[in-house]
Length: 132
Image (cartoon, rainbow, N blue to C red; front, side, top):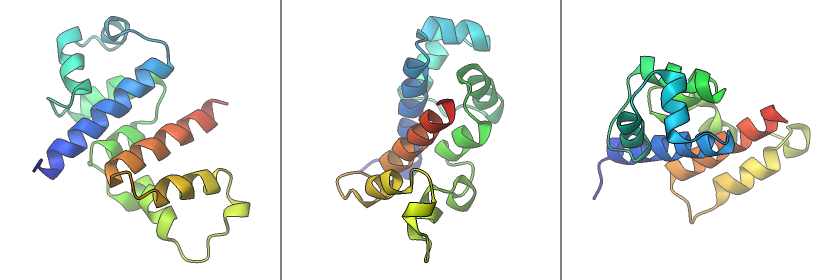
């Protein structure tokens, strides 16, 4: 059984990879933009290495994703600060008044996904809404 940190690293790596692909960047291009090595970024994306806060900041700047989003994906911010888990369980939330809430609710209600996968999908969804 994988350790929780292993699962979190893998989810973070998958999120970074998805954001890089959404930005139409190759791993080599991201490496150049962040001044990090291509092999190191590959290890991060495959969940083999837990990046430091400094590295997450470099990646977030290059991918135009908030540092808070990457920190939450890395498990360095609690769910209350990242918002995905809190929003799903908030009593009295009216999905019709919150943009994207019904899509987020559907993701969070899907029993076929792990919590890490749900958080990654919600984060990707929100970033797509922000980018227009």
